[in-house]
Length: 501
Image (cartoon, rainbow, N blue to C red; front, side, top):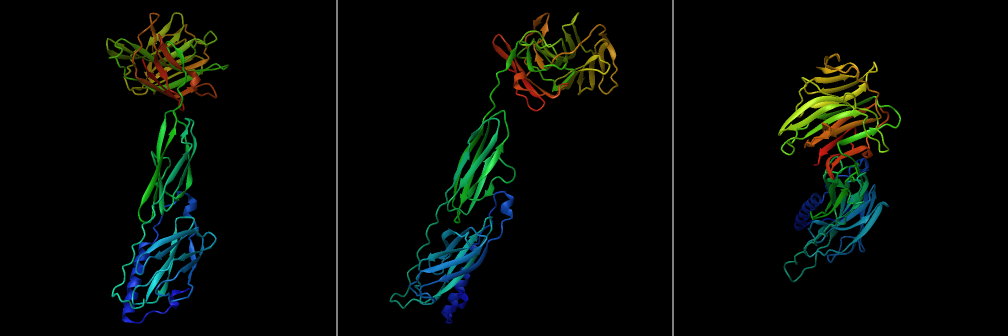
């Protein structure tokens, strides 16, 4: 029913009332204009079609104008692209619009009966009825219709009773659940489920963030969100909060905790003098190995006369079934505490050899914080070589089996001035590749093991293809029942070793 077809009062009092009603209607419409609500972050919400009100009509038992005592009014609406329709009403003449009832309207139409409103004034007036429509996305539209109402009959009392106060708004609810609430260290998918009643807008937040983009993120007030957790070695924890707010600004929230468990600590194999990783080869001879690390600062206050060597090597590992993987050829950096003073040197060794060949490179200064790269390989001529590069100083300590050893510039052509001969020294390869922190021996006895802090090996390579580090290949150093040094779990192409004694 089109309100424009209803008669309008023509008296001065009616004209004044009509102006007041129009102003109040405009203020009510502005106060209740739907705020834009953020979507759930999906592309589907951004492209949802705009809801449309095709028509709004009213019906009454006795037509219009409504009697002064009021009468039940049925408001009907036809819509398109809509899922929910909220019917709004005045609780008395000249009052603002308030939500009466929200109903589903995905079928394209909906109707709600509005209780009578009495006119206690001596002049006719107009009553406003409105419908707010929401679609699948975040958009909404609103239309209203106006009905005239007859004036009240003269009363003995000169002034009408004051209008009743509007009812208190219904508080929103908020419910959040996480399934599963705890996942293993290998990661996996987690579903966040949330819902709310009596809410106009809702958000989802996480500390720390579980997703990229806005945090809190605007979401529908009922739905789910799936996150995928990556594998981890340490325990991870997130606090997730779902918050809901109604038209009156009242809010409610629900908070849950999501936990990703730490990886179980491996049961490391133990060695009395080595800690790190040993990669075995079942058949192919290993012809190359390399790795990089940063020289640590020794804590000589804890071990004033201790030592530790950090190296890469091929062969020398004792098989559990007996025997070894071949003669050990190794090169790296030795770190020592002598009467509380730290000392550092680059060296190479073949063990066992006759006589035993273990040499420090002369004129090869090493300092804490230097970046070291060590490698062992069989050269194009067939001769085996070791090379320890101090990438910080630009110097390299080189040994060629059967020729000699010395120091050269890392950027040179590979030639070096011999500091000693290796004529008679030969090597035939081995079946393990090692990256090790060692409690080395002096005069056939292990020196006190130095507190080296930690060392991280990176850029690990071998001649094996394919190959990778596994926890089964890690070694922890234990002496007299005390674990002195342990490796970390492998990560990409590296790992760390830490002093624990």
